[in-house]
Length: 375
Image (cartoon, rainbow, N blue to C red; front, side, top):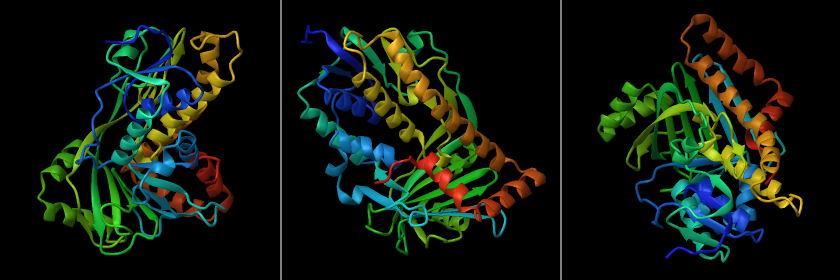
């Protein structure tokens, strides 16, 4: 039977954003109701990986999740190599040159989900509920298909990219050395993310953005044919790659909610915004939402309720520019590198070559994309 108490916050959604928010607010002593699916173990077929920046890692440390992750489930990225679709078009980033211990971490999605679930079990301020309960604030973290967002009348027009993201786990013939690889070849984007599962120092997470019909072809191939196509696309720059998991795919979209807060409610994560995965910023944006909302609520005036509309507008204002900027940046890059127009092809490839010679600009790009903290 559900509790009759009135909660400070009702969190809708059992993904990484919803669970992180529940833990962050519970750490402030707030009484949190978590509405979502029943507890379930991590799926053994989950092939997703997250590229987490310094700010996301800082939040996970604050909620006592990061250090509890298995070492092989969080792999540091020390260098990144971005290639265009012409010889010599290359942009390199190095943690050492940027004055960082690492550029990012590649994290096992299933391991993070499981550790968040474990942390929830040990929080005395969080209660699971199977139905909505009264609360001062309703935090909507239900993802792109949120019913609660729709019920609020918030517009969330999906802009399809006519692309699907194909994901898998890979093992390479060579050590990854903490190097992430990315290829922009119109109209595809191929990313290899260094990882330590299933084989330490020799694994990669794959994210391959391709046309829907190409995604269907890749999913239908037998393992040998898929590996051949993948090694041809990568030129074996990361070694000879072989599959170490099943393959998965999902449609890619751009979206921004028309409103992200109102009296008694707020949107976070994919319920508020979607961006193309080419920069690996989806979960980073969601966890930045969590950190911002937790800070705004912690600093509220003593007389102001958690669901006060003016209070929540502080969160909305702070998150508006970063989310819009990331959406426009990834959308612009996707358009630029997806075009097969000869003039744009020259522009983008020369641009990569030019940027590679500007260390100060590269540092600014890293700071904006990967967070302004050092870890």
